Image 1 (cartoon, rainbow, N blue to C red):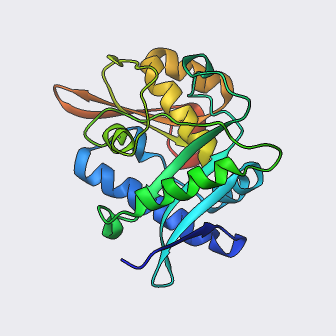
Image 2: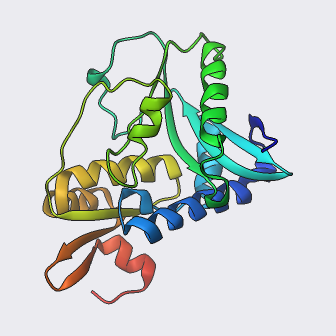
Length: 225
């Protein structure tokens, strides 16, 4: 695969959102609903570009992968777990188009991201931080193979199979989905309602899958109370 990696331009917004949606849909189709099922939007990509640097991998003129680098800490990452450094860089929203997976796209983007972190504006990044699920659809094993070291681990036993957050910012949606998944349905729903978030909690029951919607999600989806 002839691949190039570069920083995204605003003309790439629609294509980046499409890659993120395709990657999420592919994981959901293979493994069922989960934190990976969060939807991306073009508005979310634009907002992320204002807060960080969106990187894309291009093959044959088409974007096949993307990730985001930023000094803004996502809500889902607890900084106390990591070695203290002067300028931590947070990696979020890694997504590879389904037809480009397993062909070195992720490794190429990570290598590019690491180079950018070393020359980060305002001072070099001393560490890249991220979170990943150690699950069938998680990327924990991939990052370990690329040399990233696990600093902490949290086990979730709350009956949830997934959390989907509808938010203008893809970065915030990812962070909230992870944080709410950790809280579980009851506490997570209380948090979602307090913050006015549009959230869908998915659980598995003996009778099949069940979805629970926050008030904002019901409003956005046109569902009755």
